[in-house]
Image 1 (cartoon, rainbow, N blue to C red):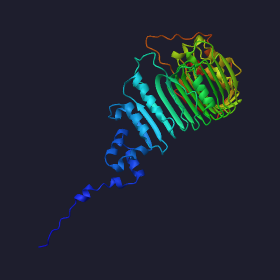
Image 2 (image 1 turned 120 degrees about the vertical axis):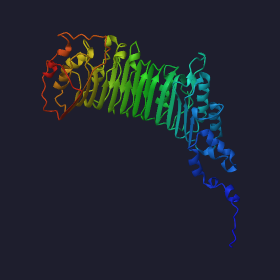
Image 3 (image 1 turned 45 degrees about the vertical axis):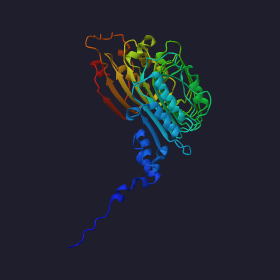
Image 4 (image 1 turned 180 degrees about the vertical axis):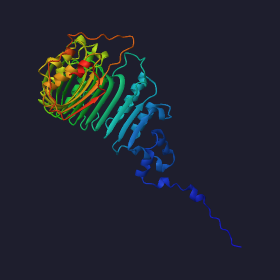
Amino acid sequence: MPRIVRKKLSGFRRRDRISELPDHLLLNILVLLPIAEAIRTSMLSRRWRHVWTRLPLLEFVDDEEPVASFVDLIAGVIRGYVADVDMPDVSIFVDLRYQFAEAVRIATSAFLAAQRVKSSFGLVLSRDAVNWEWDSEEPPLLMPCFPCVKELVIWFQDVELRMPNTGTFASLTKLSIYGVYFTDSGNGIGDVVSSRCPCLRDLELRTIEGLKQFFLHSTSIVKCRLDTVMDLELLHVVAPNLGDINVTKCFVFVTGPTMMYLQLPELKHFHWEDRGPDKICPSLPSKLEVLTVIELPPPYLKRCEGGNSHFTRIMKMFRRIDTLHLDIRIAPDGADQKDLIHSTSIPFFGELDLAVHKNGHMFGPTILNLLSRRSGVRKMSLQIKADRVAPHIIILPCPSNCDCHNNENKITWHYLEWVVMKKFSGTEEEKGL
């Protein structure tokens, strides 16, 4: 009878094959774990002790980290990261509810990485992350200089932020700041982006308070978006290489005088959704590739004098436009509508994408006027939108002398190559146009 020989397998069981992997593979494994779990692997053996200190991504999410203090975790990781390796992307997302002082401590700890981050840095405090019953004497949060970072995102909610007074963001190409309150009327942010960001190409400021006068003088920037900069009185932009600018709901919140100075010789795309400033000083190319003008919705128009946003002031800054995207409301006694019908300064354009909110008024004459004096229009897209009105509100028909009945202009269609009409309907009078 053959003898059965049993081999001992205990040694095989004790062998740690994962630890035999090279560092770059171990890092690919650890980066899939929450940061706190990745750090705990340092207790496995001497081999694992310092692996996490070379992680290619440091991502902190407070609701995923089972730790006693989220702020201490951030500070400890940043201080413990190995010194001879450039710190990689750093992302911090705060969703849980904190007292204001604790939220500021989180930001302060995150800023410890400012001198070492080489690629991108993002700090996001969600809208619900902070208990806003805080001491009004709390000092503003001072943002440090990030000398090596390429992309920087700061997303707060009503936190007072002060920009650094010294230092150069030498490698920064993209800057996005959301939800902060600038305590110095915006002098700090203007100085930083104008004189201390030599490589900045993309700037976005959204839901900003305290920024009253914004000066942007940059030879590197090519794209700028200003969205809901709520205290803006003066916008002064001198940027010889800027090709794309977006201004949305900024001047509409201000009751005093407003002014806009633009020196943008290479401008190609302009998006406007705001109240026209009282004074405009443009130095722009006579021809624009794309102009998008969206009239403000009724709740914002109530803030405007006479209920008019004066969007035609923006259109008149240009002589020729390749493509005009126009989203407007037809309303009785509207100064902007009168301007579209009667003005001779409306620019020429080759393609028209028109969305009309008719609200009980005729839209035909406005379209006829736009086309009758623009004989080179090749393409037109028309969409009819009806404003929603509460059932108890009765819209009275406009009088016979309303500008929406103006039908002095007749047009020929032989230049049009194609026409698209969406949700198209009209009165018998309009059908006859």
